[in-house]
Image (cartoon, rainbow, N blue to C red; front, side, top):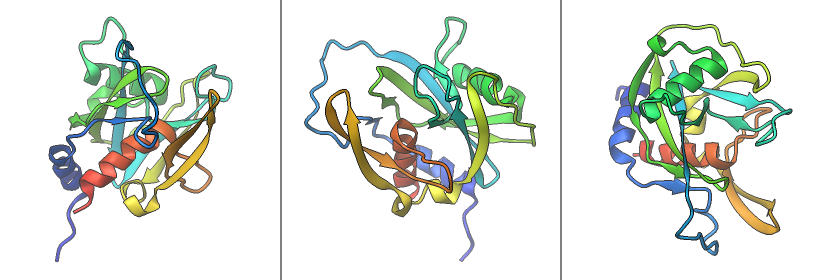
Length: 196
């Protein structure tokens, strides 16, 4: 039996992944106000060969300091859509040129506890590039094996107190990197879609 190319598996996962996710998925007792207004954001789920590109956010940032994240951020007025925002953010945060990326499609949206409606854009890096962390925002750019973060067996369910309440979340640690929260939840959805 021949192994399926990772990009082919990702393309199949795009067709299979249909359910949006949320930071509240493991917290069914949370009641969200129907009048909440979410801010649009996008992240680039960039696969380079058999590895996934992630960042470690600067420890000096006000929001999510030191956390592991996809390159990405909120949509700016000049962004045509979520794909344009994800590509722009990846260029700014890690130095990934937009012309070195083949966009495969959008994964299901994800709602964060911080009020963002995130569109994950799945893409393949088509040529080598030199990663350059954005000073002041990104401490490190690193790669993790795609096989590790798309294997449901590698995910844990953990918890901590947040704003006075106990909150459960997915984590998928890799070496010194503690991948959790929205990043891990998006990856968990991808892992589920890639599991035969």
